[in-house]
Each structure stands twice: as structure tokens, then as C-alpha cells.
Image 1 (cartoon, one colour):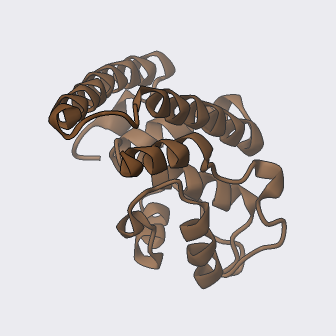
Image 2: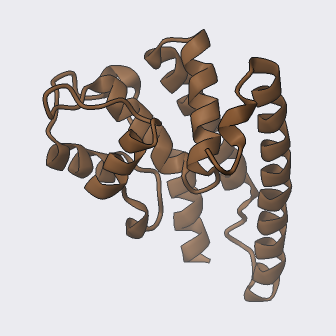
Length: 177
């Protein structure tokens, strides 16, 4: 099935730029949005970040303010990660993860971990796709992938809760914060 072959190839090959390849000159908001659209590993154009979303991440304390309306490598790395993480984590949950990351590692190290685990996950899913899958077996594949996503989401939220308690960030997960 040609569509599965293309999907498998995209999942196996498309990755965001490494930290070293992120633009090393500060960018204005419109340049950031344009860059992030190319940097995204999303398969749906509607998943791109918008200026309003970026401003909301700043207001929510997930992302620090631009320096004189310009965004640097640290911003671009975090926004690249946010583009993927926003599909599965709330802003509160992302704040816990990034807060703990800031306490232990610099921006480059955090971004390198993000890229490493994204690569492993995308490759793992690509390995599960068999281009020879028949139309009859597509529902089984969809169900399998959905249940893996569900189980991973359950585990992710529980481990994040444990992480928040162990690092003193449990207040960040409270709904009224």
C-alpha cells in the first residue's frame, strides 16, 4: 500500500534540526513561525504554532520572553519541542517537564534529549508499519496504534505526577494554577 510506504518513510526520516543547526541569529516572530512550520515533524499542516499560541506560552510561563522582539536558539529549541508535546501534554504538564529540565540541564542538553526520544519513538512506530497491510487489516493497525498511544498517555501522566512530587513541582499540576 503506497500510502503506508510513504508514511513509514516520513516517520523514519523526518526529524527537526539539531540544536547546532538551529538558526544562530535571533529571529522575529514571523520568521519563527515560518521556521517552526518547516521544523515540525507533524503530518498535518494544522498543527503549526501561531503567534497567538507562542504569546500564550509566554504568558503561561512555559517560554521566556523574546529579547527585544527577537527569539534565539533556546526559544526555537523549546518551541520545536512544544510543537510535538502539545499533541499529548497540557501546558501545565509541559511546564513541569521543562521546569525540571531547566534545573538539571542547559537548553542544548534538554533539546538533545527531546530529539533523541523523538527519533526513537518515530522509528519505533515506523517499524510497526507494514506496507503490505491489506485494507482488511487497517482497522487492526489503527486500533493497535491507538491503544499503544492510550497506554503511553496513561503511563506518561502517572510518571509526570511522580516526577512533580519528587521535585517539588506538584503545585504546577493543580488545575487552578
